[in-house]
Amino acid sequence: MFLNNIIINFSFYNQDFYPLVILFLIPIGLFLYINLSKNILEELFKSDEQIQNSIKKTLHEINTPVSTIKLNTKILLKQTSDEKIKEKLNKINRSCEDLFELYHDMEYSIKKEVQNIQKEDIFLDELITKSINKFDDIKKDIKINYQKTNMIINIDKRGFSIVLDNLISNAIKYNKDNGKIDIYTKENTLYIKDTGIGIDMKNIFKIYDKYYQEDEQKDGFGIGLYTVKTFCDENNIKLNINSIQNTSTTISLTFN
Image (cartoon, rainbow, N blue to C red; front, side, top):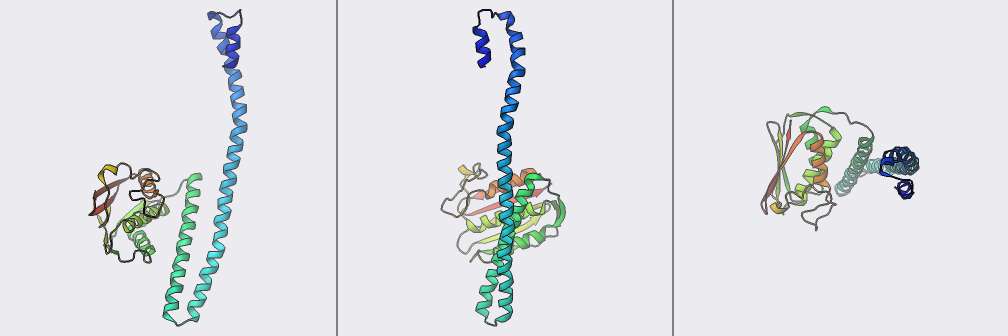
């Protein structure tokens, strides 16, 4: 643009000469763009690589203290006969398992950015049971009713485990005191129904937005349903939410 303006202001410039000016300026512009952007992008990629390496290093180092805690709780469990102490040690042990799950989730997120995640045939019952067990200590007075299924799905196992964890966590978080959660399958669809506060229908199109929370007083960052929706879209799973405010919310996942 700068060179173009200079040439236009020259006294010998006329409209017939304009195509030649453009042909002259295009390679110069491309040369400057490639060389300038190359230096900028190289620094950005270098910075991004350093961040990823730092995260990987930190994740790897988390394993050591968690493994140490887990090992020592097992030793203490063998050495004590006090049931109350055993119960507390078992809670510490389950918390260690949760930290390991978080580690694997972070590891999965990094791998997903740089490589294709392989799908596999898995029993849906295995993932649902494992996810329900994770919330034993935090569901309090909420009852989870699960009708076992023989359904087999071809899916990214780690990714779908994260989806289930988010959906069950939300069903607990937004439930009422002494509420319940029903988890069951019909044909090729998985249903998760809670007796919670429901969703205001005027916000139904916002709930998938990143960082949006229906109730901002609740813990969390508002990325759960965004994560669920993104995974379902990527894996051709039909996600549907049917909610009655102050009564219930039913989430269905239909596998194609």
